[in-house]
Length: 344
Image 1 (cartoon, one colour):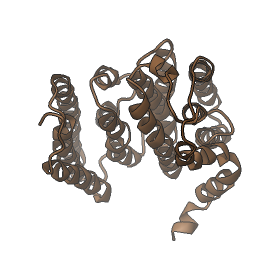
Image 2: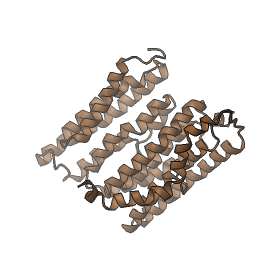
Image 3: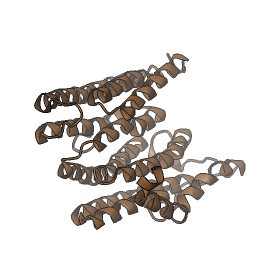
Image 4: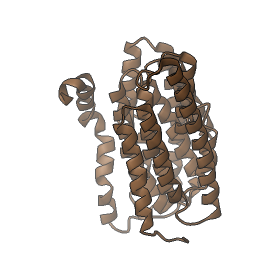
């Protein structure tokens, strides 16, 4: 399996997708757990797609962490069933529901249970890193939406995720670690709304995917996983990567800013003033690093525009990011306010 993509890997991709779909379409807690395990069994072979020792080590770490969180999840669910004799309304015991909550946070890699995620990302390919930071978070986020208590714990985790990731990202030179800590920070913003307005969490998640797909594709093509390689000569538009990075950081008026703005407006309307302030400070700390990063890319690099066609490929991506404040803000705001009317 050295540097090859075998047709059997399409089967593993199908298993991974079907496991997530089982979790998303289920209303029974045990079936959701089964979907998580099927997803894990399909994803682990994909982590060893090139057969490297580092990939095998990362996949073993991922298996141990996911197995630990799944064990806590199913044991807590069984104890809650013994307490309530129901699989559908299991959240009457605050201690056991907190264990379920923490097991899902461990799957997501949220602070303070984030220790395994940065340790793994340096050993992964960009494709596997993208899947872990996006697709693999979809099912646990959906399960968190079903837990209707422990709001204080969720708010504390969201605040710690935003602040800790923004501080840890400072002075990082590995691009995969930078993207990982950025994902943990964005996870904090998503968790802050998951028990208040789940549709806003979904919109934030979709916006994060829209920004991450072209950014990780370009970093995979034009970098060697380290920050200094972005200053080397290449033939892409020198505004493409900086615009995507600043959009990921949430600089207005780019696409990433819209999601943060809507979350801040909602939190302030609900009188979560201190939480909003601390998350805003955490974003400013991260933005300081991203501005230094883009300054280095734009000033210290020597870009060659060898072919104008290479600039056209990413023109739509730049336009979506730059004009998003004018195009998408009102549309997303209306969708959030009238989501139930629109879907019904």
